Structures are given as structure tokens and as C-alpha cells.
Image 1: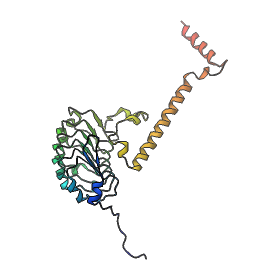
Image 2 (image 1 turned 45 degrees about the horizontal axis):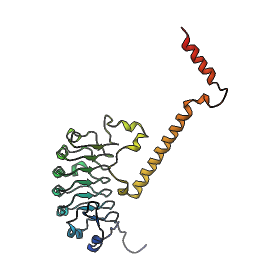
Image 3 (image 1 turned 60 degrees about the vertical axis):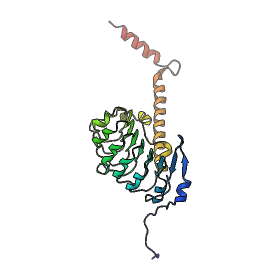
Image 4 (image 1 turned 180 degrees about the horizontal axis):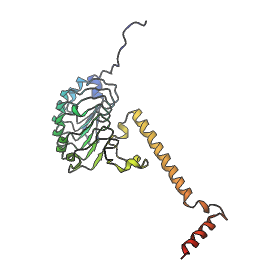
Length: 261
């Protein structure tokens, strides 16, 4: 028997120095704290000393919980928590009044653990709730009047509230692969068109396994599209490919029939 006890998965410890070294300048000149893909299992308390950043990226880690101390980040405009193991969000997230981008896709969020205070994020433009365990969407999200894009794909939704569908500034709503009683997306019947559908997760934000899966699906669709085009070309004039083919006889037969009284 080997000595010692079996240990569970242990995350990487983030120090304040590591966090400071992870600060970048965003495209618009703001401060971005990028702690993505760091193997973090618990929210690093040390980053509360860097609460003046404009963007916080904790995506592609193993976080199960975001503490209420997230409210310390009052300047936050961009928060990315996708591809973790989050089962809930804190009510305190509703205090982040400057937030315009929130990505919590690819987690384990359920409807009952979506905080009501999400509806307080009045400046939110982009919200991604895709790839979770949601069976319904709170009607209170209809209060997010500035919302332009919302991702609801790959959940267990059977309906979308009218208050959300009719948001005045909403331009993109991705609700694919939900068990709606009546299909809300005609493109689902066409595998080629599915390649061109909206995904609110950018390629650079995907984990390696997700990226590989998406690439494989894209390759399949491209192959299907290519084969379909080849088949279409072959079937256009199949009997005119060789001289003295039966095309002449077929054409003559069609002409005679069309001239019958």
C-alpha cells in the first residue's frame, strides 16, 4: 500500500505578485487582469487589492463559486467566467453597475441559482448563459433594456420569456439546441447552415477540448457542403458528359411528348 492519502484536485495558488504580472492594457486603454487557464479552484482573495481593474478574466479554470466580494470591483466593465464549474452566482454581482459584458457560459448554473439581481445590470450589452443547466429564463431579465446580444444555447429551455425576446435593443439571440416544443430555428434542419450560426464565445476564449470539438464539427460541415456541391454539379447534366449519349434520345422524347395534342 502506498503511503499517504489520495488527494483531490488541487488548484494553483495565485499570489499578488503573479496577479500584478497578469495585468494587461486592453484595446481601449483600460486595465485587464487575465487569470484565465491558471488551474484556479478557488477565487484568489489577493486580487481584491487590484479591484480597480476594468476587465477581469477568470475563464477556463475550475472555480465552483464566486464570492460576494466581487462587488469590490466597482469599475469592472468586462467579466469573463466561462468554462468553469460554477453552480451559482452571487447576488452581489448586481452591484457591478458599469458592467457591459458578462460571460458565464459552459458552467453548471441552474435557473434557481441565477441571482435576481442580474436584472440590476442596467448597462449590460452582452450576456452569455449558454452551455449551462437552465430550464427557464427569469422574466426579470427583460429589465436589461441595453442588452444587444444574449446566448442561451445548449440549455434545457422549453420557452423564452416575451420580455426577453422583445428587448428593444436586442440584435442577436442564440437559443440553439434547446428542447423547444416548436422549433425556433429553421437552420437546425440544415446541417450546412448550422456552421454559420451565432456563437457568443470567441475562438480565443475556448478551451482546447471545446476548440477541437468545434473544429471537428466545422470540418464535417465543410466536407458535407463540398460533397453536396460536387453531387449537385454531377447531377446537373449527367447525360451530356459523353458524346452520343442517351441525352439526345431523352430530349427528343421529352420534345415529342410536349408537342402531343
